[in-house]
Length: 106
Image 1 (cartoon, one colour):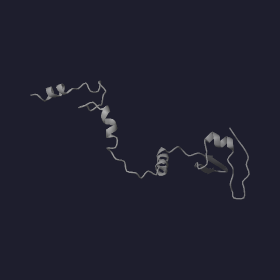
Image 2 (cartoon, one colour):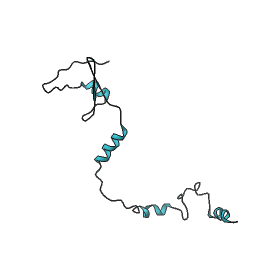
Image 3 (cartoon, rainbow, N blue to C red):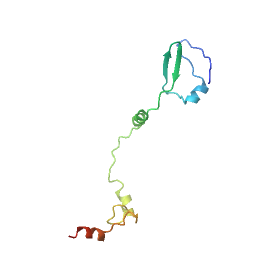
Image 4 (cartoon, rainbow, N blue to C red):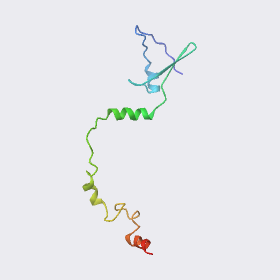
């Protein structure tokens, strides 16, 4: 357990000791929770919220450029095998057109 005594300044602010900030990974801009129980003030870091993190990331991205869905077609074309759904992977392309024609015969 770590315990340190600190002074409250004229604005009612207290500096969280460095060792405690490091232990809780509190950085500038981090949120903390204060809870008062009887005569005890409890300070803790809130639970991690992944949705909130992704919202912040999305807000920081300033990408207004429209993406052309066909932009990379020329790049990927040479990698594709003709009449193949799975590119050049022979294991995935074991189903041939000959096999397909047998299925359609009655």
